[in-house]
Amino acid sequence: MLSVLAHLTPVTACVAACSRDPFTRAHGRAALRFHLSLAVYFAAIVGVLEVTRGTLVAIQLIPFLLFLNLVLVLNAVLFAIIAIHRAATGQTFTYPLTLGRH
Image: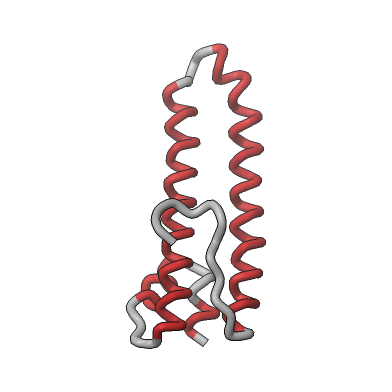
C-alpha cells in the first residue's frame, strides 16, 4: 500500500524510499527522483523568466514557458496514475524525464 501512496506526494515518496521492503523502496526512490526532477525543471523555467524579465525575448518566451509548464504538470499527473497502477499490480515503474541514475 505504501508503494502506491509513494507516487502521490514527495513526502510519501520520502517515507517509502526509507522502507525496508525492496519493492516499496524502489517505488519510493523512483517517485522521489521524479518529484525532484520536476522541481529542477520548474526552477529552470522560473530562472529563465527572471533572467529575461523586461526584454523582448521574454515576450516570446512567456507563452512557450507557460505551455512547457502545463505539459510538465500534465505529464506528472499522467505518469503518477500509471505508476500507481503499476505499483498496485506488483510491477516496477521508472518515470521518464527523470534526472540522474535509473
